[in-house]
Image (cartoon, rainbow over all chains, first blue to last red; front, top):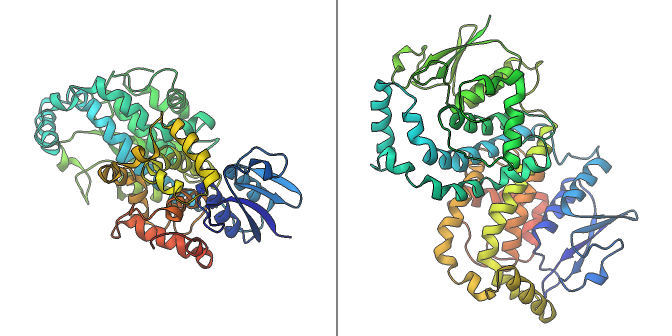
Length: 232
Length: 232
């Protein structure tokens, strides 16, 4: 029997535009499951099946009502384990690449503008000459001092840019889930970079990222914590 | 025999601050492999083993020289398959959560400010009244028209914010790697949302994201493409 799915529609019944419903439709197709979609509009909350939480997507599968695209994905994965996996093992390498690209294009790009001068202050004279010349060139001729001089003002925007990480480690222990793996080390590497050479308070103590970083510092007998650095 | 690793150091030999070297040190620890690190400074390029690409991390494992943290991670995973995996199957669910949090805190937040009025223009009168009231309240009392009025000026910043996605699908076919899985559908859902109701050109035709979206539209017999929408 086909699964029924309530799907947000425009004034034309077949114009379907909810990103969350699209997640579920693609997941159902991935699993090779038949689905009959019911067009549903914002103001038709009373037309949804019971229990009714007033939102879509919601599916009915053999009498069972399941709400919320993430819950539906987990449900489909658990209910239909013999069909193609929505979270296949081989995906973790590809997904780690996404986390790495986020780390390099958001996290590390933000970090370097906060701690650039601190690096300079922890390297020897020969390296300092090389570092100043190469980094000032990379920053379009700005001095190291100028790159970081407004870092206090830029800190809130930096912290806001970490939302994808924050939301993740707020709900699970590690970026990779219950246990750390390579993507955690990629993100942690950026924080170890800063920790080694800077006492600038990147992360507030009540931030879920702070607690995650502490879990990372605890790993492997405190490998990260034992290395000379500042802060926790 | 322990693996040798060249590790960026400060003026104090034990102050190690390279984010890329930290990735490798954590990966070696994860695999339970012994390592002897050699402190190395920016200007000591001629002290690195051959073949020498002038950068760290580089490891020597039983005479084999491996450069670059990503290459080293792949090497360790393939060379030591019986040790704890750096990319375990169970990680893909956790990693998909990161992609989902990025989608919801960056991609969808950026998108809604570009296409909000287009949604309004594709829903019926009853829904329009509800939508205007609820969304204008959510945007602090701005009219739908005002939210999107400078969208052309905001487009470059929106496109730049997609760098983590762009870099990922530039080098691999899907967010999840060689084959699509749930995290691809989460990101794709956001683009289907826009596609259904807006002809605004979010992504340039020569953007790797454009090609990825076309691959996504091709899936499951063109499931996404067949749905009414604009553009490709």
